[in-house]
Amino acid sequence: MTTMTDPPKADGFRFGQLINDTRYRSYTFQFIAIVLLFLFFGWLINNAMNNPVLQQVGIDFGFLADPAGYDINQKPIEYTSQSTHLRAALVGGINTLIVAVLACITATIFGVIAGVLRLSNNWIISKLMAIYVEMFRNIPVLIWIIIIFTVAANTFPAIQDYRGDNPTNTPLLGMFAFTNQGVFIPSLVFDGAGGWIVFAVLAASILGIFALRGYARKKLYDEGKLVKILWPSIALLLVPVALAYFLLGQPISVENPVMGRFRFEGGFLLRPSLIALWFALSIYTGAFIAENVRAGILAISSGQTEAAAALGLRPGRIMSLVVLPQALRVIIPPLISQYLNITKNTSLAIAVGYMDLTGTLGGITLNQTGRALESILLLMAFYLSFSLIISAVMNVYNNSVKLKER
View 1 (cartoon, rainbow, N blue to C red):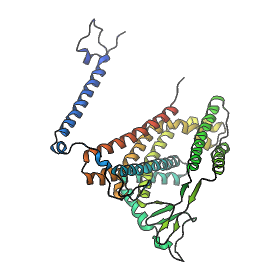
View 2: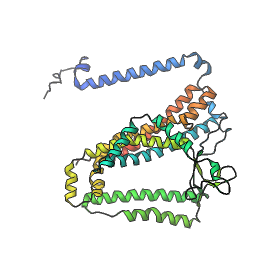
View 3: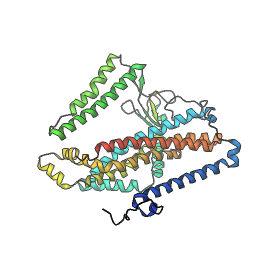
View 4: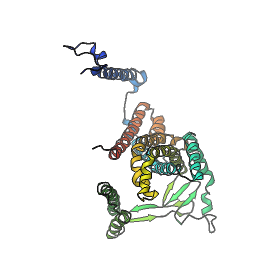
């Protein structure tokens, strides 16, 4: 049977079928696009190789083994000015990952809360969430980074206020000190391998909670049985960790920041640049995620919520068991793009002096060594790799919640 778009079948293949026959046309255009793409990249590589400056200095990544000669204020791992440029790039990469992961988590929390509350029947709450969404997503994120950095650096008390016999300020709960140099928070101290074993037990407990939730969901969907998971989840989270902690001799301790002669000693310092970047990316991207969540919820037919309410389900149960599981199919695809935007927007950290990968490898290292091509290639490779990993992980989750037809 022939269609209006397919020409009559011929005895032999003709060259004109590559354009006129729908069976071959898409392959023809794809082949042309690939050839043009290769020609374009070939042209770029040829121009680069024929560049007189590049011919003189060549392409060499040996500069990564040279001493960096500069300090980094936020050091998640050991680093000194005599460390190599590779070590500096590693520190910058870890700083980038820290901000990206923290911002993805908090932006999701802000977005889900704002998206759900924007659909609230309470007029004041819904309008406040609408103001939040419209205000934060329509102002560039760089402006929010600078605003929050200025507020954090100028409104927090000075360290001198914590010194002396009668300080005007004391750490909150004895653990959190808010200063104009940053926020000092408690840090975990691992005593040998036992601490990492406890940490591994905690990770296994979290995976067990997800497995329990999956089992409860399967029982509910397959057999209609509601399995209670709140207290079992709490027990699964706390009991194994507590047993491992005490059996291994309490290998993890908490070190609180203590005021020394000139500054706080111990604990971990969250600098204003880290706080500004983290919080600005969270509230900015959270506004976009809120709209994704709202759109996903509105995509669910109101008849389903009414049917669930007629069965006696509470509003919280309706949202968690009926609405959100279906809304995730609409929410997750654009959510992936928001996570990728957070990762790429971390490169704005240089505006407030936070030494991420762009500030180290793409900034000071590039200027000191003059190896612009090598530095930019490594920078592109990092962002591309991390973005592909995020996309792959989220696509796996997206496939797990997609509607599976029988």
